[in-house]
Image (cartoon, rainbow, N blue to C red; front, side, top):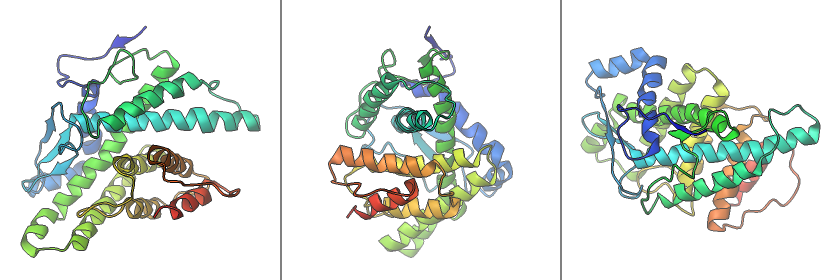
Length: 309
């Protein structure tokens, strides 16, 4: 039976409101001295401003830090990231992991349930719509972190997505904190930096965030996956890898993360990356093809990526 976990302290209009307070708890606990030092140096505001508005992502609903060190997070963006995390988790398990376990005779946690995948795909389509048009999250019919039955297969995925979501947001918040640590906004204003120099600062913030999240983690693989999701989620905004005037191209950011995390060839991160590219290709009909057999998902990922102009 579905039940709501919403409390009076959970403010907001989207189901993601029930996880807002989880974000900073883990962020501070894993690198408390780092955060405290930024506060004492007056580089980072002690608060995070949460914006609650019926606006799509293109209406400046993505995270940013201002010149006073105040990190801004928006509810629409939080909803989008949770859904991306849920969809690729379900997709990976139901369409790759479970069939492979069956093929190789490996004991499974559960049998394949394609209805869960179809349900997740509908939710994913809603997430993509949030990029350009805001609409309410139908928590009666779509999976969500506020109203669900934890004793069902869907509930199992939701609970684990909640944990993954917090890890993804920790990476994103550390990215913003790194901007404060290195005083990037001040450097941009005082030195009239070029577009390429600004992009280098973004890559520096990525690198610092990755180092921070990997320096203290419960599961290195889960943290690595959260970094990949945090970056690759941007793919569905556009039909190309261009990061625009201020951010490096998405493939550059992903390859930087891969270089630092350095996953083994059999790490599931590679299959997740392949899924991201395939689903992105499906959305924009990019014509990416598998033209031969591959030794592993790592090889397939780089082959698919090489076809993107």
